[in-house]
Length: 174
Image 1 (cartoon, one colour):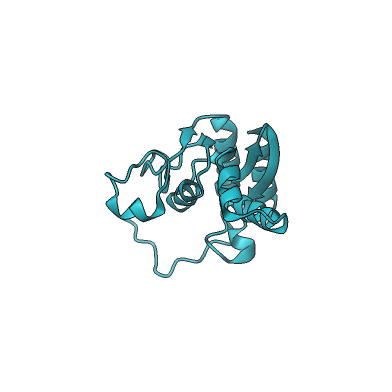
Image 2: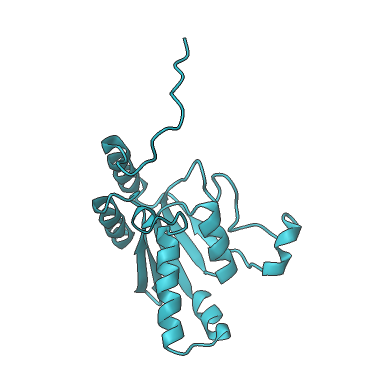
């Protein structure tokens, strides 16, 4: 998790929401990522997606088949500073990642228990997901949560210079 926090600090330095992650196979970090949504102007460029894409590119260059890639993901664990959002949790489930360990909860968009429990859902709970044949994954939260929260607070306390300006005036209730 310390390495994921380093990735989050890199994101903070780049004026991104400070979330970072690493993917580990057999005790070795094989990929890392940090949020790049502002830099890329692409809301899908979360830390998890960055790490996944780097890993997929590396494995494709190595000539791994789809079956080999699936087998490799089933042996991988992901450490991320904030609970994966619904989009990322779904992607991790589809890829068949073995386990996710995260820092703080994501009370607005969390896909691993805070809003939805996509890591543990079954086809009976979501019949439309049968097509993906997700296996689910082990999920553990609260690891170095205070450090992750501190980074997020630093970002939001300084204000987000890249945030869109409000389209309508703020209403003050009396």
